[in-house]
Length: 415
Image (cartoon, rainbow, N blue to C red; front, side, top):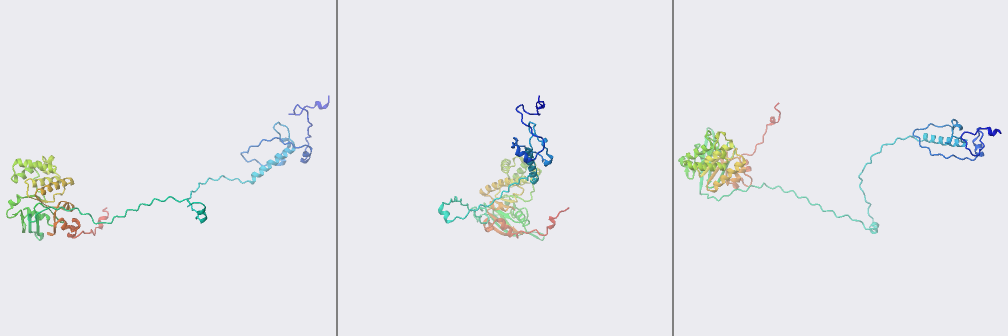
């Protein structure tokens, strides 16, 4: 048996015909290329390593360390190719700078006006230019209304006979010590009229009405009610007058029903007539539920209304009312005005004083303005206000408004 048969087969060799094994001695790269044509082994594309690999040097690579998948050794040309590829990859990693991914910027939206190129004559002839839709014409603004004079409330006009005078006041005067309260007042009130007397506080309105009704004796002058002299025949004149004084002097320990009965009996009315008229007046003034209560328990407005009812219970020919709407709520005031208008329509005469200029020019057909005890203006409402409002005329005659000066201390804190 020959020596070749005794030699065991190489590890990993196939069972086919044997091929001569190359001498493991090292040879140069050029000799290996000339001897055998290079048959590169099929290589799979290597996955990209996650981490940076260390650089590989040629002298560190040995042929014995390079193996293929079946475990057999490869020639030196394959090793050279692998080394060169590794060196190129290492150099490329060193050369390329590592850049951190920049944070994405938010795009800035800028509104840029779109400018259209100017149309030329050639463009106009080449293609028709698209025209815009016509704009809707703007609605013109409503012009501001010119400022006009305030609208005056219509004055009350009643057909009155100037020859029939219900109340005549001539040369009436009154002094309190050295103070002149009333200095020669002259007023004529026609029958069936609604006459208003206005003036500032302390002007002499209450003093004048007190002398007209026989409550205060005048120093001079004459007062007649339907041709009855108030101070020569006071009993006959007072039968014709219903009075609502400014300072109410009522028997407030009586109930409302008892007070009305007392007022009617004092005027000469029988009990049946007093009871009937008391119920009618209580219904008109809204006092039905208060007739059984003491007058001292009434509110200021209710006291004013029960006093007005007492002044009307004997059906007088003329009513003299001093501030009848003071402390009265608007609803009750409207009821009182309605009652008084019906009374005037039926032939009665009303003379009242008030500080409410609006109320006076709404319900009165004639008015007189008294300042410092003198009548500065009188006549119909239109004649007195002279194209303006009654309040403007009143302020003008009363001396105008006064500006508050020297009140700076009121704005400072008291702490």
